[in-house]
Length: 569
Image 1 (spheres, rainbow, N blue to C red):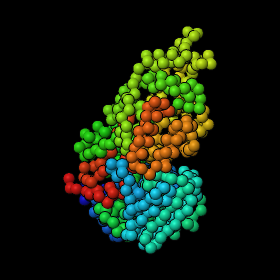
Image 2: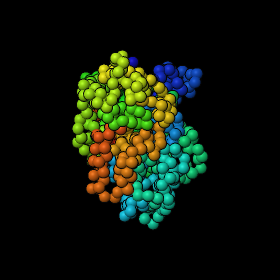
Image 3: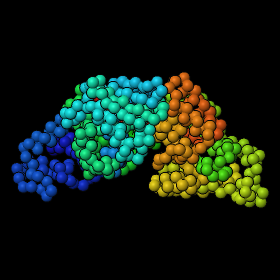
Image 4: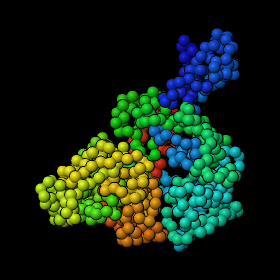
């Protein structure tokens, strides 16, 4: 029995059923393999229903799988892949950075550096960007990566993906030079953030994708041709995992793991169980931390170390600036004093968060300015409201607006913000408002938000969201922008000019000055009220060393996958 278990269980550990989601027998699954292995020992040759009869080769294959188990790096994520669409599924797009890396990357300090690009140059007026590619890049089918691939990819995104339509609007021309292995993009206005933008777009092989129409709707379970250290071999929905295999034509630093598997689970709780059982080696969620409530459980196992870094994203309360009384800065000032930040941070982050500053931007962002901390002072909130003419003239306990009507506030939330919404409802009632929660699914939330059919809403910024547009969170508020996550509700000329100045400057000193001005603007005008800053905590098995995290994509960066090594216990 001991010999049986040692032969079967390690082999099965890499199989689909080991995802923690599916315990039913499947073709080639662990239960089929156990039965087939037993039959082979007994000399029985008949086939099982839905399975091939086992052979000497398959027995040897199971033992080989067990022997090579250490060559697989396994990542747990609650970010479920819903579609085998390389361009259409946003979670898949993030994980595909490993196989189809962007031109640029962000280092652990938040500075931008070349990735597929070895270097780049910017014209004096900041409209022309030339990227010089590494000369040792090859697609997993053996074809070299060319400047034409990069030019094709950027134009393809601009044409085919709604979120990249800005490329079509601003890209005036492009040209490639095979002589110096470069591609040049010329924009119709100064754009200082192109190096940041190009840290997010996966580069595609033109010889594959140029024949694919409607790429957002195109689906394929793999393999997908890639040029990173790994290529995406398989999207396995039955097992709930992505399988990345080594790119045989990769010329950079050789990764240790033969295979990287990303196991996606229905919830963080299931992912935690997989970690505790040793089924996976680390945890990743884009723009999110490992659940704070689960950290102690993993600490008790003694098997995990943790990376901790202040998130550049945050959860915030957004008033509808298009609607009174939220268009009144003094009313927003009173709202800010009505919120108990320490209580929210304590409940939501369990000690891994802090009270934010009025300047919105977290301290982990480049060019952070120390502005005043937000303060919980309901008495001051009531004083401001009374001074500005918001009073309870009929004595019913509810303040009236300047139109004489009771102020009844509706807080629009998605289910994940239910507890925060309940706390806000309580705080607002304490200073004299009638407040109600309205819970909506993601699609409904987007529709209501885009039509400005809300009073207040709770939402969050992702790391990319904080960096997009003119950076420092500006992309969420600029009324000229569109997108599912943005509010596009601020049309103050002072704010819009600041955004344009940031996008146009080529001087690093000026850029910092503008960043400070933007944070001062947030502090004075409160177009949104940050609720807490928090840390991103990432657990990893102590048998693996070499991890680091960057502000944009956390641990999911190419450098980790070529540097992480397994060590003996």
